[in-house]
Amino acid sequence: AEGLRDAIPENLRTAAHEPLGACTLVYALLLSDEPAARQKQLAELAAATSPGVCQETLRVRPAVRSVMERAKLPLVDLALPGLREMSPAQFGQFQQAVRVLAESDQQIDLFEYVLQKTVIRHLEPHFAGARRQVIQYYALKPLAGDCAVLLSALAHVGQRRQDEVVAAFQQGAVPLSGNPQVQLQLLPSAQCDLA
Image (cartoon, rainbow, N blue to C red):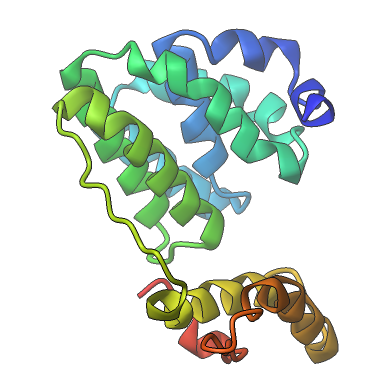
């Protein structure tokens, strides 16, 4: 954890503590590496926020890109307290901008999905004042299908060979399969989309 925290440059840690800086960090994480797609995103971001926010996002982008792949979610975590300082109107604008950036290329990758869900899950109750319903399960059996989809999706991410996919799946599935009523099967990647 300390290594991941130390991988985040000091200027980003400082920016994460105030609302505008925290917003631009999240926006920068969502910007595409492809120039044409990034230009489209920036135009949509300017329409959803302001040209100044776009300029600040571009200013922090090089530092954000330097953050190791493993440290991107800790960077989002670091930005959450700063994001909580937004006004409700700013949060609405932020929520819209995140959605626009993530959906700009007509595809949502795993990181974009996780980032959206993490940010909204942590911030929406703060701004909406609504408490989430607590759902409790006392056995794994009703969740076996969902576990298979999630573990299969994670196994397919970052693996090139089928034997690596199977090994990654087994690493997650074996501890859950200790219960004889729970049998998890590796699913093809086509059955592990966001839907």
